[in-house]
Length: 294
Image (cartoon, rainbow, N blue to C red; front, top):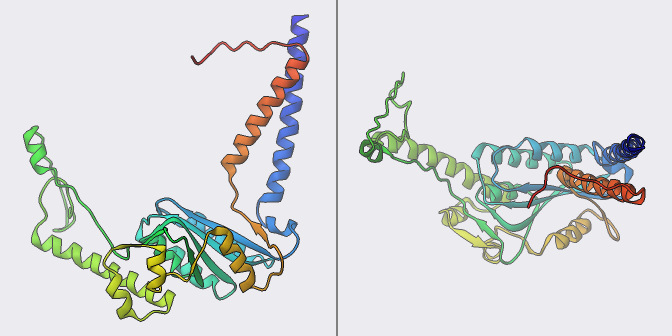
């Protein structure tokens, strides 16, 4: 009798697993790839740039996907980032410039869109920010730690082998020489000039005007608007409405939000576990777990 109950319980679990994974499969069909084709009417897609910008691949893939989808009339970049790597920001900036030739790209700033976050935003057709959004920070920084004195105190000596005179610039084992500091400053200055030019080109501003505020200072969204770095005040919903008007969408547009794979899995697991427990309780089974958290 006990064995029969176990078999019935396992059968119920297997059936529920098949059911939920079938649902997940169809969710994948609807939300993956050219998913927006299953929605009717003209659409606006949202691409998120969140957190420290350490790579560009995911953002670029979404941008390219939506750029090729004829049903999507415009793309909104939702930026909530303090910045990050120069290379990834420049790659995304470049992709936005290319996509602008096909369709509108509008930026919606969240709580922060500074440094590399603003670098990317400056490439878009229009920028919308909250009055209190932290933005700007048009500058470049590189930081090194010198642990030489600390290592001496604890009796550790660093040994570096190199084949070029400046190969160990920034080594924590020694102080930088004046020549090395000059080399690194030239690198930073060059990247800074690239940043300034990107903002001037993207925002169609006089370069001299950008230079005046490109000292690394942060700005509120309201201050940035007064300086010409931002176009409108508003939240994401305001940006959606503005974008719809810009591309001639009448009424409420269909908005394609970014996929949240983790949320889908969390929802699936929660619902599946709840359903299994409910079914087993209805059958009169009692689940005893050998491991408990107290």
